[in-house]
Image 1 (cartoon, rainbow over the protein chains, first blue to last red):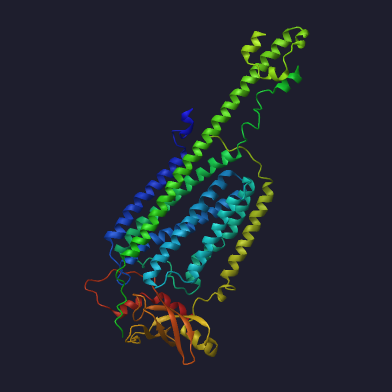
Image 2: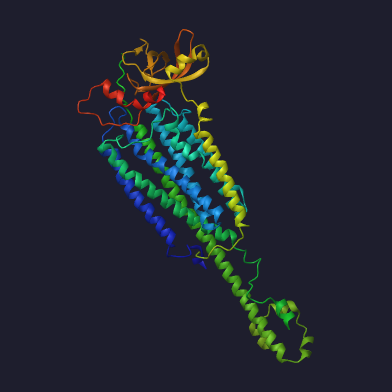
Length: 250
Length: 100
Length: 165
């Protein structure tokens, strides 16, 4: 009996293994990139050491948009061909995406204070990012408030697709409108020594985030399995004949 | 023309702030995934074990009923006057059935 | 653990596909509306000196933001250090700004700024919030670097070029 309380299967599932490998690779790349970014690469001529925030802020911001894109695709996939797999990926990418959006805003805010002189301003990039954070946060909250798994999956898929309208706007905001936020990096934005850390932290963050999404999706699938399993006591085993059936058959 | 050099100094605090915040958030999320996964594994293991026990009990009951059915087919109808109530017979174990 | 998720009806697949189409139409419509500029034109974050000049009397009194480049040589700091005046340009028009408070460390001649405040009748923009904008160009410091105005200008092309359109 005590072994019931230990994790059921000592061998991890395939999805869990993939998730752990992705996250592990991501952590390794991030560690090297952050080391180079903090201690090896030179400061910016004017921004000084604050420029180092770029090596974590840009990968986080791009991962945020990428994760919400995964959520969008999973939502479309679910509505087109309903399956719990799509719902699991949707749940995972919504949660990880909201976390990343929060991180992006915090990092950006910390970077803005010394450079712009303010923690926050309602510039188009910042405003559209805040809208993105709150709309996907709302979708995530919706999932917690709906008890019926089927309705929860349907509604959150629809809400995700609608909320996604803002994601390309966040991307284009710095091109369409004049803003305080700088534009996207281009090939000439960062000279060699300033570029190297980003070449490591960028794929590192993407790998770590995909690992998180895979692991979280696996957790969602497990939860759905227990959530949808019929309570053992309430439903008799259909294979075993009930006394009534035996009596009646006589 | 003022004395504005346009260069940021005393900036490491912001760098540590941004990196520290990011590391803490990511580490907490990794931990939360681990603990939630473990809790879920336990919950489903308990549910699975309960389900298995239930199935075993049901199978045993079914076995008892089958034995009883076999016997009643063989024996005389006067057996029906046996005072055993249906509730008792439903909970009969195979050993009991053989006793009769 | 490895149990498959118990089957549960999702209802008709046709219905959920209509949900997908409906949601896509709503999202696409919202995106198109913003992208086409119908909403975007109302979301002006700051005015350039040219727009400020065109607006004339209408600009006076309301809280607005003005963006542009700090004209080299125009910066004058109050002896008390509590306020400063400088000129903001978009290469077509120039507006004089009086700003209170200590500017961010990045503030310098030639850099992009966004100031929030009101236009006064005297034609001086009175600002209480000064923000410095940085372009997406980064450079390591040169050995024994001195403050080179030409070099600084490069970092602000993003903001200055933007506003003229």
